[in-house]
Length: 575
Image (cartoon, rainbow, N blue to C red):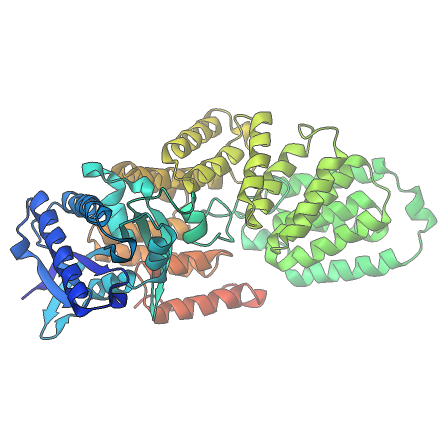
């Protein structure tokens, strides 16, 4: 009996088997499929007698020997099924065609009196019965076989392209069968008929995340910094008090004293506040602005500077409403210089973006671009960068690509746009193009840091390392991937996205203690991160946290970002 051994497992069944008119026809198809499997075993130089078959009507669950070359065996299975099914079907009537579905997974097996009881014994049949696999064989009528591969098996074996395996022919899907949920990869042997872009039509639905997913979100120079200590950030109650005073003053008529205040009077105040803000002291910046905001509440540049301080120096989730209120007022009530108008629009766009109001953000960014002589004039490049982000969030990646390509033409060495174009290349299954863009961005950031438009250059460096990690994985180069992951961890040791990737890599190496350490870090930090729900979902999908832990952490994350008073809530550690 098998007990605690890691094996490659396969599920196989016949398409439309139950619709065959007679028992004799069904038996003939079973025998034919069995013969094909025996041929595949012979071509892979494995003894079919060592294959453990658990029959299941129109198919079987099969456990392969532990001594096989997995890549060679999988390649032989796909080659034989495709070749011999095509030969068989060429001589049959359309209604008598033999088509097969195949599912492949790997994992620890334990055998009992009624079969197998471990995760892979559940995963393989669930994938075989998944709507994603059925949709694939239905969408490609010329195909003779459709195969679905577990995500970890795809990364460990298929992605290396050994023995003529073709990872580029697979597309990602979500498997949802009963209580089973997982990411997997699907391919068919003949795509001459059916959709030209199966990932778009049959794969994972468009994600609401930016293309840099699962990377942290980067913000241009006019938006929030993340590295400012809590004790330097404006307290929410202080902000409310200042805004309440400003509301009362702004509602009053202009006074002669306020009319006599000129731009030259406020310029030293604005410059001092800006210096405090850029040096990471937003509370001091707000304190500098406060008396002048009461003295000249109708001064547009002072109101804009206050909005900038709240967005740049505070917790954005705490102050987006206040920021937009200030900017709405100033755009409606103040006669502004073109520079102040574009800054107000840009800040309001970022405030809308952080509130997930991407349509409003897009409108303000387009208005900004309409205010400048050309996109190359400031702040046109910044507006293009964030406009692409909005379009991607609105599930319009083709429009985002157009905007980012325009920016790349204007700023060919800008690492911010190269990062985004790199991730678009990854999404298009072009890992070598992605790596070229990531590497070019990293070199530009190292040699000419002024080419970047982000205030968070360490975060950008970290993101580029994570992008190169993803690109290396997609190329099947795990050693290089792990090197880039280590670089990312050095740049941001507490980043939950990086910690989650480290947990997955340690688990793949069989280093459970190290995997657990990284998992605890990822869960704890994910709760405190606006997009940490992505991290929690990934850890659950990789079976690194239990369903109960996932539910508790998800609840804590929702509480953190719906009630700012509970922002520091932490989940229970993984079991």
